[in-house]
Image 1: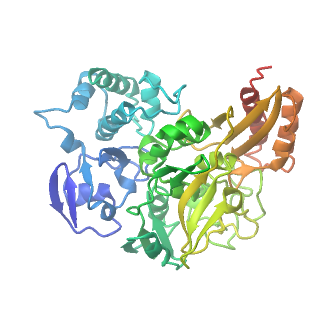
Image 2 (image 1 turned 120 degrees about the vertical axis):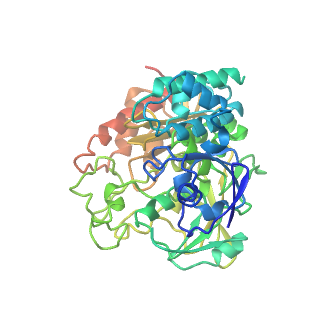
Image 3 (image 1 turned 90 degrees about the vertical axis):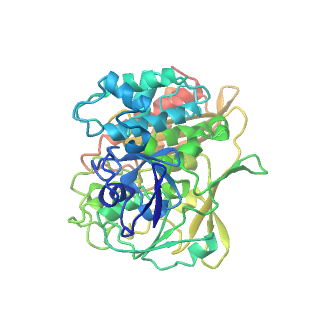
Length: 165
Length: 328
């Protein structure tokens, strides 16, 4: 099977039971995406598939052979950080760091959704959405941080949202 | 996860040729794979329908919408026509799951979501829904999140969905393709089955039958809509109770009312007696209490879910105040 990950073509022959997360971590050595609950509840495994954020633990690799998968390793590098990575550093948006790759991938996908004008559960008006702190919290509720770095995570995301306006 | 054969369907017709009861269609997979990891679901064949051309939302000639079964929850919630014309549906979708899950979960799959009853998930416990005729561990067990309406002595599971609750209030029609190649239209009111003594049979769909679309009829001008969900935390939790309301008023009287409920029963719940208590009435606390009495006339708590009965009474009344503009 052939997979496109972070712009590169990879060949692997995973069992059909293999999730995208296990493909990344166990077959391709891309261990940036983390396994937390393995049931779509914690968000640590979040990656971007065709630009949309998804739980990589809850989808099969075999179903994504034609798709464009981007992980934390593809967003930026140590020398050239993605703006969201830089903002998490600047705002200290983590403690232990385990949830961070998922938080960052999710935040990148979320800002794209907000740019498209997608409303959320807390949007008073479904037609006009402003990305307030409570909007960011609601939209990021699929990413759990057991160190509870949430205030700094929200600040980091808000800064990137402001700068990309 | 148990081993299975993976096949990708090239057309809806090829998909419905798979009629073995041990076959499952997979689209978003967010519920099915979760259950397969726990071996609650152990299909022998998975038929991947995710690449079929069923992901469009189209206007119907009648002024409604036809939603492809593969439209993701997030796209449906954000569709400009849904936001403008079917706010209750956008609201229900946005109240469910997380951003990541809504990006994957599909319209057809969400209709067929399985219960989150703890014992259904726990393969060490008897469960009539998971393994027929083994018993129900929830009756007399931990049942805080389970049903107070429509239950049987064999099962007290709740349907976990939000979207299907809104679709019941909207009188949606589920369109399917059957193994014999014919399509059929099933009112959402006819789609689900009560548990009775066969709680493992949840819908009227036949083996191999594939949901292709969901059709929403048009709503009258000036309709008022809301979806209210009460849950243990502010986001990303299943409903303890929820209400989808669609209502029209004329000259201070309620002229039409469609109310559907989540978290109460084995299916998205709707009861014409609730609506009969409201029709033609001027909004008042007494009228709203009568509607709640009608909803709860057969309600039966199981101990730790008794609180749902007063909770849904208060939630329904609050929703009716909001829908009728009567803030008392």
